[in-house]
Amino acid sequence: MYDFAIIGGGIVGLSTALAIGQRYPQARILVLEKESQWAFHQTGNNSGVIHSGVYYQPGSLKAKFCRDGARSLVAFCQQHQLPYEVCGKVIVATAEKELPLLENLYQRGLQNGIEVARLTAAEVHEIEPHVSCLAGIRVFSTGITDYRQVGLKYVELISLQGGDLRLQTQVLQLLDTPAGKVLETTQGSFTAACVINCAGLYSDRVARLDAVNPEAKIVPFRGEYYELVPDKRHLVNTLIYPVPNPAFPFLGVHFTKMIDGTVHAGPNAVLSWKREGYKKTDFDLRDFAEVMTYPAFWKLASRFADEGLKEMVRSWSKAIFVQSLQRLIPAVQMADVVPTHAGVRAQALRANGNLVDDFLIIPGHHSIHVCNAPSPAATASLEIGRAIAAQVPVPTAISIPLSS
Ligand SMILES: Cc1cc2nc3c(=O)[nH]c(=O)nc-3n(C[C@H](O)[C@H](O)[C@H](O)COP(=O)(O)OP(=O)(O)OC[C@H]3O[C@@H](n4cnc5c(N)ncnc54)[C@H](O)[C@@H]3O)c2cc1C
Image (cartoon, rainbow, N blue to C red; front, side, top):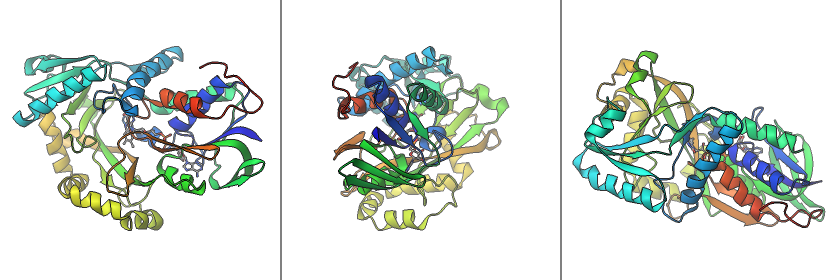
């Protein structure tokens, strides 16, 4: 019998297990992950950016958890000698019409308590000499790290706290019994007083196993990247982002210096035919049919038809992808970039066709379901974990939380 069973060994599940163990050191904690490695899906295939929180709606969970999470993550990396760098980033306007949007972003950064500075084109060039732009803003607290390594450090610490971590254990069913929640898995049954669903791309299906309706479905969007060939990495010093279109803030390819010294360019965002489909040709009938028969998807598609089409074209045409990159750095040529890994984002979509913008954490019966944890959830992981730990029921053997 466990006090807490956490489903999903990505960065959110692991940070949750870590935070619960810190709050209730005597709690018996179980983490179940279906893959043979931790941090294998979204966490292991992301851009590695420690986001500052400049973009998010003031007052939202994303804004708060991201700003605080960036600080706590940097402190965590320092404490555990994990690689990171707070190199800052520039967001640049490349057309007149983007200048008011850039100013809005600057104001939003101030509202969110982020250190930002306006830059002239000449000041941008001092930081990023190869960028072509009209103006920019500098976001000082943006950094880079390796989230797989961060996740593995969480694993190590959970293990030291006495947590029970199981790989290759997929949760198939959840049953309410007088003894607690029974988790039926590919490796037998486990019982826990409280279950926390951090299943990422499958979080909606796991919620339904617990008779919780998240009122949204996960739609998987693949983000494909190129990387600069080694002798062109000098074109990028830090991170270079375009001004996001407010209607599609998650779109817009950018350049990211990675912590291993490579430079990634991307990602785009195309519908994936499979929830964990990393290749263009990956297909799963159930995943595909679920999206195609979800009326909300067609509402979304009809509203964003132009952008969706552009993303698809960019997915298949390297020339178009490179054209998008040339908006930021005109010197980039076709031969300068090669394809690299892709990641699949779990994005919750409501029945009305609106994307769930904020993190979505839903309480159930002796359970909590994290049903939308897109970017910047890796940055915010320590804060998300703490917030969930503050919500879980106090384990029966323990009466007082040892820390708050
Ligand atoms: C392309 C891309 C770029 C991104 N860039 C950034 C960035 O730069 N900075 C940032 O902060 N965020 C970024 N993000 C977002 C960030 O990576 C995610 O928000 C975060 O990793 C989500 O973590 P998670 O634990 O919820 O999901 P995941 O890492 O996907 O983990 C969920 C886990 O649950 C497991 N699971 C699912 N179902 C079951 C089951 N039934 N039984 C057992 N286990 C199960 C899965 O195998 C998986 O390991 C990016 C995401 C993508 C895809």
